[in-house]
Length: 301
Image 1 (cartoon, helix red, strand yellow):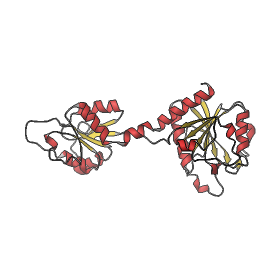
Image 2 (image 1 turned 60 degrees about the vertical axis):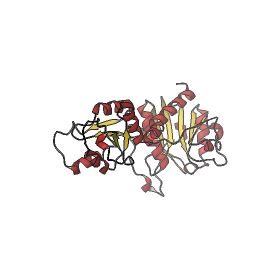
Image 3 (image 1 turned 120 degrees about the horizontal axis):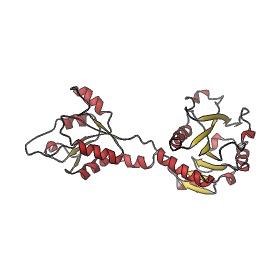
Image 4 (image 1 turned 90 degrees about the horizontal axis):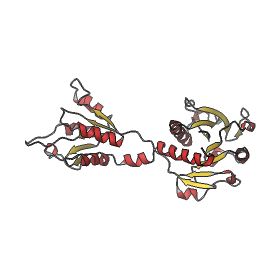
């Protein structure tokens, strides 16, 4: 599948960053993207911050003032992709030229998808050309034109969480490995990956690369305590520990404690990162999958 993406791109602009993230996620699921991007502004040339992303075909062929002379509208021929996905904010497109372009897309049989970033459109907006309106809220969807409307929250970055453990080998590593495999998280095992002794300062630097630190120590029949949990807390990362005599003196409001079984341990990891599930369900990958589905429904591929 190949589409046209029309948006600001590679500039100091929230919509440009939105487009960049979405197009990268679409590329990851085999959607080829041709980008119709804005030209540098004579008023604000400093807004151009980055070069075009490698791997994208980018045509800088429009500005707020109008369609570029380098790429005149006759370029809208049958060789172009059958769908245009346009990021819309009223200040980006002058109504002196935008309606004519949208109608030209429709005349050549192009499916038009518009993502509205704010509510409402100006007088004269060519709403009849919009096959699919994508909106971040239901409230915005009620204020904009489109033959069909879908609500999709603004996506979120979803860095894969990293779980770390360390110490002298007391942590029950098989549970950490299994939980990370099931959750799709990464695991750093500082017990086995360190062949040398490291200072506390170096250990804290290593722990700072983790999102959560797990110390699932099994219960023992003697009086014990853990120095490792204090080091883990000093990283200012969430710490998950077993509810065993190793950690009996650690206040429960400083750590996430779990009963000594695997399911309780896995649940404690998820409790320690409450935003993870929220972000994963709203990731750019999830958004790209929904966009690809809707594109396929419009163009029959």
